[in-house]
Length: 441
Ligand code: GDP
Ligand code: MG
Image (cartoon, rainbow, N blue to C red; front, side):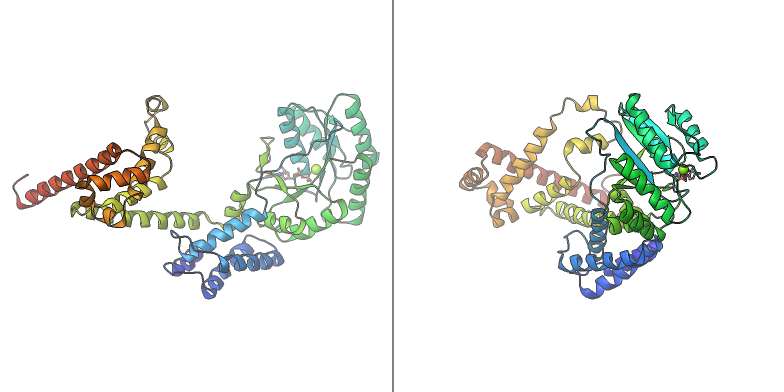
């Protein structure tokens, strides 16, 4: 599909503005991408309408084609929708934070309980796991195994006592024994049912949790909407955990859930192991949903080719010896696109920080800015005809004043520029001779 997407966006290339027809065509492909990522149909529809509105009003960036601009908006909107900041756990002021895990059977509640406990201990909390799944055979044992693995105590009372009473006793146990972070691992059902909801509501009532995290399997794209809607309505959840993203799912559930509940996705599950807790990154999820890796690189390439064209234009001019100050400015702009000098140097393999320590990059940047302001203080005519500046002291004086520099600084720029042109002339001469066969062989 992404190749299809690419083709559509290629088709849009080179057109001046986003018009309705372009947009319709591009949006059809985005719609397919979303549906393929298992985003709920209703969610797709409202999302598409939203993006259409924004795109039609938007200016097309100079460096992008309208199609690329649409993709950029789609990506931004997706990221915005899913929340732009990473989410954290709300801790209770009372000293003991209680987190309740909820969700269908097999969603990953028990696994996530362990991951959360582990990460809290790393934050110097004292976590306690409470086993409230009294229905599934071996559920308690499973939590005990998890607890043992990461060396975190598990509070159990077997399966003869109600889940509500276990939860209550668990929190009491925590308070009496110096634990300050309680994770209640609850039972799930294969489907949402009354009994499950009633039990969860009772537990909530009893322990008043700071967080109710809904755990959802990312493979359940379409169903996720119903599950999230119901759990949120009944329990007023505080956040979502999206598990099993290590599989090949496109993660459409993230968008559906977010749209329907408007609750933050706080964590994601990327495996069965008790490894680190993974934080949710909206931008990465947006790319994943759209499968946009190659579309994004397409945008990058387009950007590159523009720069290459400009670079070729510049070298051509250099060899024809009609380089002027406008070209000089443009060359500096090209360089600036690559980022600050210091960052650029860091990217060069072999240039270690020791070698870089002696260089004052800020000074280099300042110099570039100064050069630019000098050129900006020239008239358009002067920029096109550098010789006007070479020969006139009054012009140089005016430029120095306009740019807040000195006449010496203007002279230095002009001399440097003149020297460059001379060098080019020499190189050109050498090349000509080489062609004539005077050199080489
Ligand atoms: P619960 O019924 O909600 O408590 O779910 P479990 O924590 O028991 O998880 C159900 C199954 O999914 C187990 O086999 C877990 O190992 C597995 N699982 C949980 N989270 C993840 C995850 O992020 N990735 C993968 N691949 N498997 C997971
Ligand atoms: Mg479980």
